[in-house]
Length: 197
Image 1 (cartoon, rainbow, N blue to C red):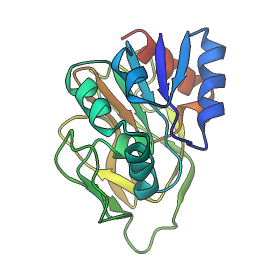
Image 2: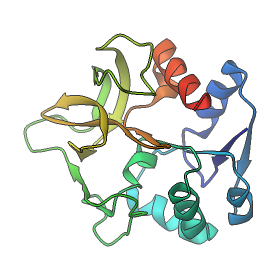
Image 3: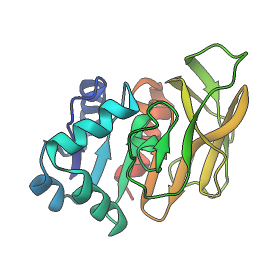
């Protein structure tokens, strides 16, 4: 059973449709008690880093979410859900991330069109769990203006102006900067792999 943390993200319905298409059991929760019993957690994300972190605080779920991730409950963060794993973001310097990993999310440099919107190629590590069974350079759909810099935990990278972390994997913690729910068969494959973790 996958627990989706519903904090009001715009892509929630698309994520639900993806899980339904895969035949995955899931439930929506909006409180710490629901997270406390989660077997797997999915954090969707569309919008603004500061607004998302405020929403998690307003729901009173920040600490429980961080505790469950650190305890090894399988976690998948999509787009902002990946960025939330870090300490901060240039999008909202006043907002604290979950701080699971050190570092800050950055804005794409001047000279590239923002947002990075559309299909782009991943360069996948052969050891990636999420991308297991895919070609080494699959295409996925992105929609973002901020990125996680290259990280030792990167299981796939993408280049848009600069190379950056597109898939992060650390134990049972997974994050993707792209939107698997909009990435056709490749996206379904990636979500299926998470469901099997």
